[in-house]
Image 1 (cartoon, rainbow, N blue to C red):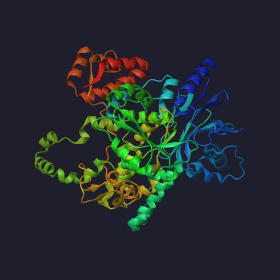
Image 2: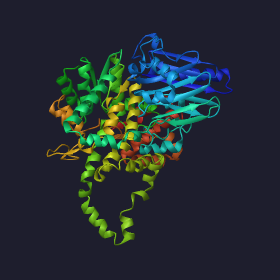
Image 3: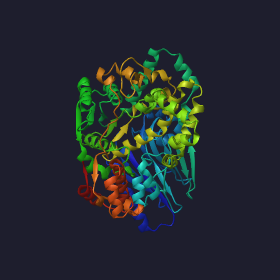
Image 4: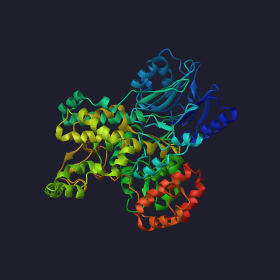
Length: 620
């Protein structure tokens, strides 16, 4: 919906303030080009860039304020019309959810507001009398929010890029090099800038006049794990479960279609975006569809076209080939505020968002989240075969265990691997702690199935967070908001307590060569039979694959006198060896780190870096 930012300063002169104001005004224009404004009281400055979707009139503009409070808000409160009924004495001047949120906060306070609202959001709420700022973020981390507090300035923004460039911050070199292992992309633990802190999902922070920060977690995913609900769902018939799920998803889609501006849907040809789109057509018969055609072996365009034809909806596509990766690599890196290492498909997502914007669309539906909550990843399903497939290895290992010294040499423990430890360390042991929590949380489920519940629990708080980060950044480059019907609060509560038999089932059909005879996302596929053609219902997950960093070819001058060479002290001889002998895919990862470092550490322009790519990088 928008971009929010602001800062409070101590002992800054007018020139310093002017510099900051100019930067905060311009760095997030892409998040909200429809209107921008500010509110200040000389020490505190709040900025808002509006992407107008509900009540596009001036009455919905922000910052929203009265004589006591100031609100800057990014997101959508899907139940704002119900909440409005609790404010009968308010004389509303707009039809926006912004005004409802504003008065709900005033009348009921932060704790009750955060418990009552449903949606995706990040907001700042300033009390003039208390001289206190509250920053809050939604339960699942759909909308981003970051802050800096160095005792001379407190600043916050929707994007790391905004804070890094406005405050002229440099990335930490160790963290940046570690991002070769994908540790930075959507981390829930840190950013690559030591001064920039990520507000965690389900958290709000209070900032006092003297910049004291106190954090309050109002929601944890574990709050929704409920043995009573699990048992209730276990007793229901299959048909009742399917009916309940279809009703929940339909209700979610309907709520997320609320907009005074035309909406569209991102479709890949996969089942998740397809079923969301098919349900959305019931409420929006002229929904526009958008897809990226990955030219070559990875293309899924025919499946997207099949969906559009089946639903009789208009489909627009943007072609994406290897040359487009090189063309948009820098732009994506800058807005990602981290090297593009793992989620290289962020680039085609950015291009399809641009296509939607060119067609006057501001908000898009997405099927993201289904794989995490309904076990749609092949590696999770394949684990059911793992013990049997590894039986020969187990036998060999059992023999070698008779000779411990030789066994430890031939089969070193994963926990003795320094690379693995570095990744766990860089991620703040997030996954490991979530798995430990999950063992107790899901102790009420059948022991043989607990691993799958815990897998989902972990992925929803780590991998999904990374995907949401990717979608926000790549969509907002083109001022596109992405909405996620599978991530509605009611759907999540149902899904996290759903018995495993509705997420994955054995089948006599060869469903997917990575996990034959196991159906993933069973409940999603089952309700899809009412809405989609058979080929889409049974389609395996592909995950928008692209060649990305594979098949790239570099000349050593790409790295010469650059960020990697400087920080790792690599001379020409070392660079020559790197280019001629190391794994090309690893070199591609190193190149992503190089582009990030040149942009954020050395402030090299995008034009200069594009010249470097054009001269020293190509596809094989």
